[in-house]
Image (cartoon, rainbow, N blue to C red; front, side, top):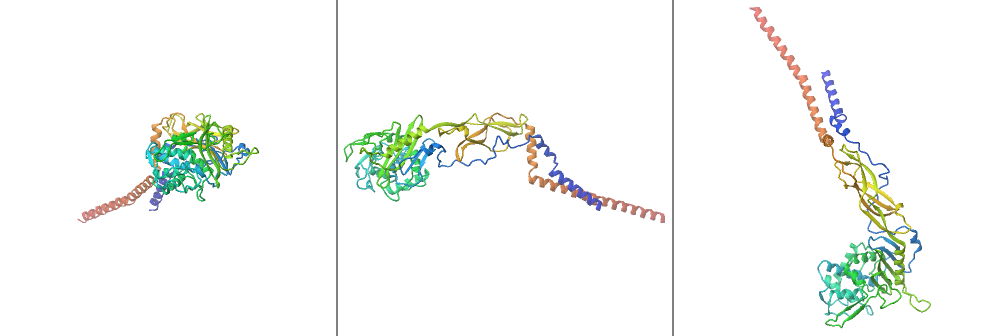
Length: 492
């Protein structure tokens, strides 16, 4: 018995070792190329940067130290990318005054683009037309029951800065001013205007009606995406035809960067908008835009003053500082290519192919940014990140295998996909061997094999122990019977 037990233990130990270490299917892994992590020169060990956040931070440059705007807050952004080129207390809450009308008209124009309204539809002015319109504020004497086209009302709001026109738009879009103000705040949140709260449609002063220069830039970038808005804010004048309650109105732009009708000396040849605003509490404010050599900039100046010069004339700083800020942006920044398809990231291992065990990887597309002229993209950091440590053949040329991120210090400028540079075919033999290895490497398969092996050993041991005993017992019985019969024969 002891001999058989020792044999059983030896068999079980041998089976366990063979299943975990030296199984025949392990040969498949030795046939495939060794998987390895790309070299450090190809994949830096630095932690990949996180996703680009919505809020852009100013670019790092010595240029920023040489600029100051005479206002309580200011910001300059690249309209195409939202990159902040300059900021000065841009996240401090301020009163926006009539720049509020950018949001009001934006919501109306978005309703037009959705097909809910049309520019030529005739509007009958509602009873909330004078809601929160204070004495002496900017108006165009629009009265309840007057009939104008939606286009006329938009021009009254943006060109002539008519407060009551904004209430007309509110009732057309939402049915009531209160519902429309709720929509204004909702849209502000959607645009990322986290420090903004509206209580009216036009910006007449209220202590609870505030925003920031940064938030205004977000609102203006969105509004300037709409052709109707751009057309209106670049117009120097507009004629509202006579209505059922009013003779024809001649409207003139309040933005001195665009029109010289009201104020001279501040015309800016590259200006494309956007909106003025002023109250005693807000000071003199301007959200402006300009386009030059394919670059579109948006500047916001809040809380400027209008001091007197020595000759007695007024220096309207909201205009002079805005044009100075825009000039500074055009002269100090340019669009540069940060990364394109010429970037070769290195190679990545390939499995299950007889052709090669590595394949080249390069960027696809082009990444541009507006940068200070004293920054060289060659000094920026490129961080390639692969989706996997290795690729399984077949691999297709142009197949995305990861991405490469461009950054400079804490500023992330974007990323491009990394793709395979060639096709790599699959070896069917290596593929089948890999499938076998994968199947037998599963825990449940190993458990089943061990159970079957133990069962076979138990059955073998049972046969060795009890089958032999039966053989021995049968021989003894036959011998006994033989001697018994022979004895009987002898007694006879």
